[in-house]
Image 1 (cartoon, rainbow, N blue to C red):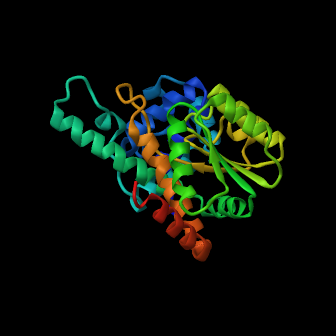
Image 2: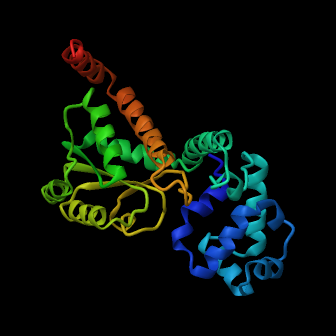
Image 3: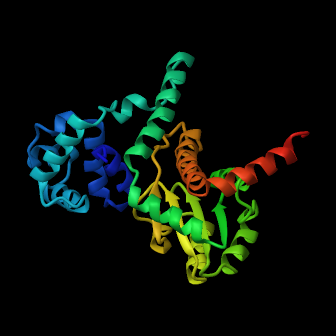
Length: 282
């Protein structure tokens, strides 16, 4: 699957040093312009040294600046061309028409970015773990708790072995009581929330298979994860808590649910009929 390189930069953003973030910000806002800049030109535009640009390339697993530009160029040719990040952000001076268009773009972009980040091997291994598990427990704190509850509710229609709690302390206890036959599916945009990191640590320490659904490839959460599924969406200054992050996570939930239903079609169909009958008069 061709991965959009700008999306990959965003997913690696929290790995960068302060100087590397300045380089990343400039590239994300001016991708076409960067293709015609030397390493010194880019360093000067970002007000950093050439070595900072080189370190950025190394962080992105590139051998050097020329390989980085080639990869970026190929990605832009074969993938969709995105609007610069600054044009997509909601601004105070926007009217309702502009705002609605930007929210639409943001939500569509969240799904497209998540799709471009799909690692099919990781998804397959995650579904193997969920299929084998004796219990599947969904975890999330804050806004991600809502996603975890929605995931549990969706799977519960076809599979009785799924669990979730809205209370953080209960989640901590559940994580500590997991075992090698269980799977923990943990939702976190940042991967840095204190409670969610502790939940991941406890689940990992209990021997459970830990599946992280998160924005960034490197975080405190991913240190304890056996499998990582990346979600798209960036939250701008006026969009903190926006639904685009949740939409990207739910897109992955839909993929996981559909694959689980496909793998276990007969039992899922029977269970779905039972739950439909139970809810028919409600």
